[in-house]
Image (cartoon, rainbow, N blue to C red; front, side, top):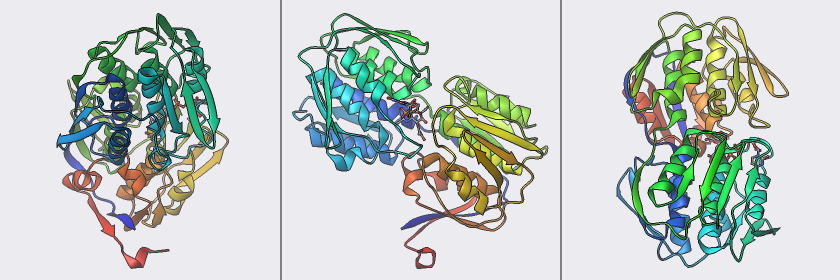
Length: 424
Ligand code: EPU
């Protein structure tokens, strides 16, 4: 077992470089399966979910090579299988993108229902309904989604909720549909736009990504190509919150500041000073933090993937704030763990009421999912004494070099392997 140990109460200072976006990478790598040629993807985060996807591609008959830590060459020309094994699919939510990619290119796909973070019931009915509207026959048997079509035909697809996964998945398959597909009430998240840009670079014709109406004109096939992934909005936000909670002064570099608007506005409202440049934001948290309310929404609203970290921040601010979650059904599992550190939070339905002013103290805690883990790291940085975080494999799915990046900013943090004293 591995744990992350943090001795808190150190102000973070300096600068940190943000990696490529994990949630863009996990869509773009499967989209490369659809290409059939050689793709070179740059600025990839070196995280567990990326490694899992490369194993899936190799299993299907494609080849993957990392010329360096952040670049991946994918040759999907040799793919001759359409079935993703359960062991790989269960590790990550994004395995569902294999469905759109394989169905699009080969008109056949078999992918086990996805794993990933447990944030309530996370069905993929919008994805499947979209594929059906494109002409695919879908049935689920023994936990495996089987999709097949003689051909795909463009359709008007309305999403009941602007689901990120459904928007991207349908978009990938629709590249191979005859005629025009329109996705209405589409998700507008930056990684939807990034995946569309990648597909367009390979020869797709996708217009309107980043708005709620995406139009895809089908094509016979895609070429290979090179692409560089956008910076990770959520990694950047996690470091911005880490700076704020420690009263630090940190410049978060290699980001797209526009993607951070909803968080930057909140941090300013809480009394942090910000300096926004072309590709960086400096957060200075010299004044005491004031609590505010957060509402986690679809983009450009405040990201749900930053709300657990925001809860940690509110815990130590003066006053009280409410966090409302409108995207995932159950994203407050981290609250019980934050309470172990002394946070005063009560959950009612989709709202968490945070009473600020807590003196956090170190404790042994467990990451229940990826961003829950990030919230515990952020809280641990502000807590007095040692915080030991278990289930770090969740953090490894989304944060590259977490400990060394934090240590470079002045945090006292280390990874402990197989420490008997922490075994439950
Ligand atoms: N939903 C359905 N049916 C569907 C699809 C979604 O009911 O067919 C519901 C979900 O249950 C959820 C809501 O719609 O309540 C939103 O789900 P969405 O499809 O937008 O999310 P996702 O594709 O499952 C991605 C990210 C999540 C992020 C959400 C929202 C990936 C691999 N995951 O999930 O990232 O929270 O979008 O932005 O891209 C994370 O990085 O920690 C993470 C959980």
